[in-house]
Image (cartoon, rainbow, N blue to C red; front, side, top):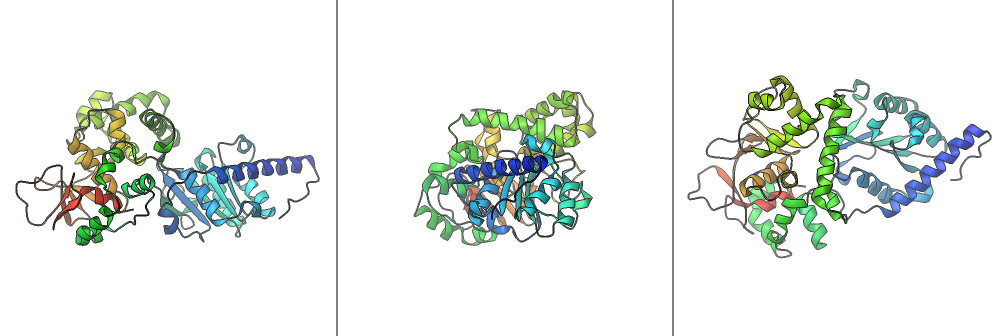
Length: 409
């Protein structure tokens, strides 16, 4: 569709900006590097008019939007457009103002990256929803954002999804070029022998598992840069932008939050001593609890409660969100048991409820499945338990290869 003729200087400026954004869109779509198709692509109902995709920094939200544009639209149709709110054009123009111009030019799907950079983003999206019923908007935001709880104007109209980092299955597909399929937890518990045998006929997963534990969760491991250094920078951005900026916390508290993350990372196997943590970072117990919640929202830690408990109860454990983070904070000092327990809870996070176990088990999943996560064969197997075993290619009865739990998405 041809671009409308612009009669006045103001409209010429608008049209020029639109053309620039379309050129950027075309370049980014053409050059997006997406080595695997994310499972979330098929879980989203793309017919919905307002879709929010949340995720922690570095998991590939931008690539996901661009992959959707490349898969569903021809660039020359100009019906779909990717924009990033970092663009200085949006310092002088609102989302709804631009959306009207885009729609009048024939646009029908607007992809908005980092929507929270617009101060009144939720009100702007509501205005678009009410005034442009023929426009679909897909936007990305930080995992810290509470789309519905903190933005009542979006209640009932936005569909929210979470994009996670690469699963072990996705990592294997990238490294091997295979097309290994995901499995549900129920399938794995019931048929893990058959599933593992099929995978092992194509690849030895243990040859890649340690690499995944170290650097496989975040897509930027594919970049020609030092992964650990890049991850440390990303973690700092999670705190400085995703927590301080979005939660409107003063910069002077930055060092306290960073130190709290470090302290939690140093003793992940113990129940956190909130009083001691409060003394260590020189703040109150209530503030420590809030900071832990913010770190959890930013996907830097996972809070694990005892069975039947939840916030505001005291956590039973606080683990880092994924094992890559542990290696970034404590290079060469991550005990194997800690790494595999972190892998386990991260693999099940998002689709299942993971609670702390008792002396007989490490975790309780969905209130009923009792798991022990082990790096060595148990001296005796207890009835009623599943064993997630590190270092084995195939399991036996209730012994499940730990790596296979990385096939849940």
